[in-house]
Length: 230
Ligand code: 5GP
Image (tube, rainbow, N blue to C red; front, side, top):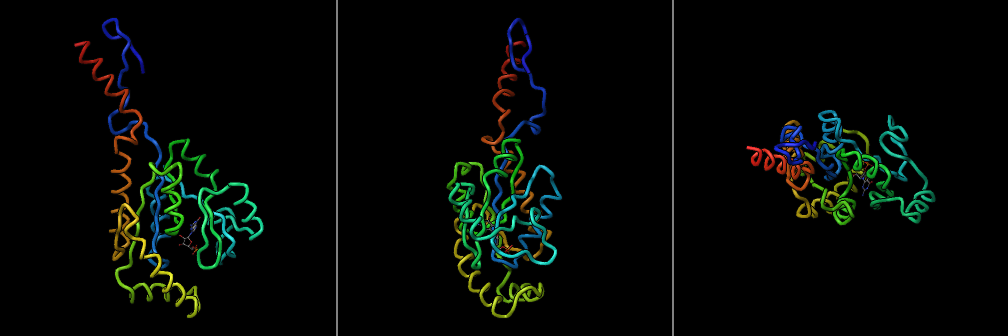
């Protein structure tokens, strides 16, 4: 806000330093499947409604309980190819034999409203996002399993995959884990609540980075204004 102080027009602080306007973050969450990424993503959104989960398009079939437009936009391979051609994806990749892609539109809408967008995507998508026009706004988090036997146990307990599929997931886990060094933060999910708190800490401190706090410049100007006004 601008006010006259001692005959000079200066910006006056109207907000506490911790409440400045800020840019949104693009939070990339990756892990091998079975590590708890989907639960973590859900709990993170419950924690703070400023975080919106990006809804991807996929060519895989819906699982029981999944709804079109909620977990994913379920689409055909032809439609997916047409969307790629039309440049509708910010990133896309083939995972477990199916195509997955992040539509531009969702990110543009929420990011322009200064919301954070959370991406539950694989390492290929993470890498494409980091190299996109949003690169400087990304923070990437990779979650590792506490051990391979524990990961296998968790995958079996889900009861979603055949033995062949489980074997395939474990093979892909090797590929996925190989990309851990590309991420800003690497966490080990021994305990879901601990990891969730670690992610909250990461998001909170990332938001406070100078480059994300767009209101800081005018606040500092207002401090100068107040100094000059005595
Ligand atoms: P699921 O089919 O089990 O929901 O997801 C399989 C894998 O695809 C997960 O590792 C998930 O993070 C990843 N995935 C989901 N959506 C996207 C997306 O839009 N882009 C990319 N690159 N990966 C995705």
